[in-house]
Length: 432
Image 1 (cartoon, helix red, strand yellow):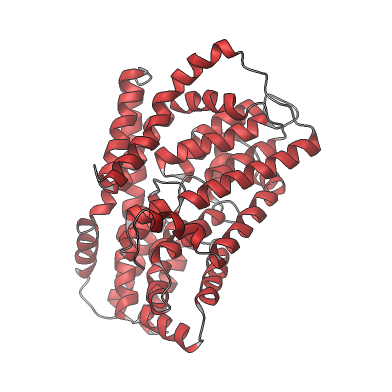
Image 2: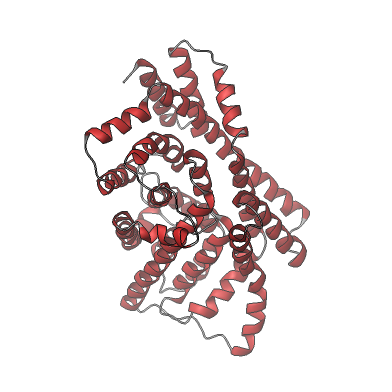
């Protein structure tokens, strides 16, 4: 390890230990590296400016954030909830099954796990806690687990950022997440079914047929968003980046004009919340650009590729090593750090071994989603606790079956890349 990388690592770890915002920690570490290497500190502005303004796909991030916040502020979550209650509410543990199906639908709109937990998740937790058969821990665990669908089923904010880092096709990544996302949802519903049968959880009251048309009508427009977005992307009507603008406009029209659920005060609150969320992401991106400059200047990615080559890893061996590394690092580091700092270091090795970058990207994102639901970092656990007051220990006690299921699916996707690549290749994606 060179002196520059040592200084960078020490400053980064110190900043995180002092609970400095991660974006500022990364920028401080980058500046410390330049000082240690006696380089011009102005390189910070150059790297950040070039990184941000040369990455067209990054425009999608604040727009998807805005769309998710608009839907959460309006009545979209409640309308989707009522619609899904018709479909799966009569199953054993109906409310938990509804939450998973709602997450599938909402995932096709927001691209964010936290938005899913804070919006539809909060609606279903409140409903479950009204019934004694659902424990607090179980209600929180179901919501936390199902929220991981958000960045897997397209559109996906982490996949957009991965595409920027790797150069992979955003459209292919979105398609690559479809089959794994639906497999996740099916497996979660199976887990809920077995738990519900064992604990004799209730079915939801039967909704009279004469009420179905009104509920379906109320949910039809929100359900049209995934169709509009994905249909527009793959028909060529607009790019994945432009799809984010379409999603934001669609959500604004629904909540503000059609449903009249937005007052000017609420809208201003949405704008401010979206601005804060986008600013946090942008600061992290800015920090990652200077850190990646430092790692590239020190030859870290190339050294990683040479090390992998010297170890004679097969593709499967390399992917298993990556899985273990991310699962361990996910216990301590934020998703953004893993995505923006560690992934670029691994990409040369992945390319050297001929690993498909779409397959690699979907695996990486799933690893990060698993990191969101286990301690000590577990951002989804903290978000759900902050919104509902459910202790993290209770959610973890009830959540281990979902965690095991996700790990088994991750293993299956590692050994069988076609789970990810079948749909992109069927739709015409053919590169690595």
